[in-house]
Structure formats: C-alpha cells, structure tokens
View (cartoon, rainbow, N blue to C red):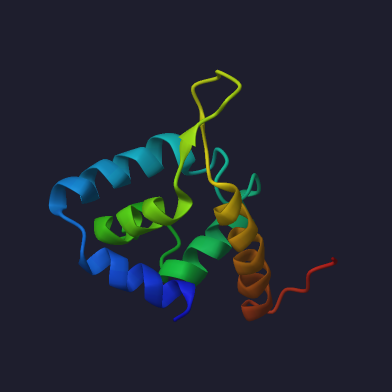
Length: 110
C-alpha cells in the first residue's frame, strides 16, 4: 500500500469532529509554515501529488485528518509555540517530494 492509498483508508475512518479539528490545525500551524517545504511551489506539488488537490481548502477534511495523523505534529521544543512534524514523517516527506517532482517531470539535483 503506498502513502496515497494509506491516506484514503485513514480518511474513511475519521469522524466529522476530528475532521474539523484537523483542517483547522493544518491551516493554522502546518500549511506554509514548516510541514512539507518552506517553498510554496514545492509544498503545493507534494500536496497535489498526495491528494490530487492544489489548495488545502479543496482537500476533504477527512483526508486532512489522515495527513495530520501521519505527520504526528508536536510542539517545538524551542518553546516558540510552533509545531513540528515527526522525524519519520520528515524522512518520508523527502521521498514523497522526490517522487512528486519526478512525476511532474522535474529533475532533482541531489
């Protein structure tokens, strides 16, 4: 099962309340701030690769909640109040970013 299939399976099992909370959290804390990439174009490319949608606003709330479950955000240890994602998610995200770029016909330098 690839990551996209995993998201779809997880999304089907999430309640409406969890869906609303996840969408709000992703919008407030993850979005452009730190989860996928500091580069907005790269973040959108990965987002579209995983969900088929270019904007967070277009993504079904259950899919957002599934993504949140995968990212496992936690408050930054630096006391800033920002959230950071798990090290495993960061590692997986690097692989997903490369796959998304290749699927879009972009060449990675490293």
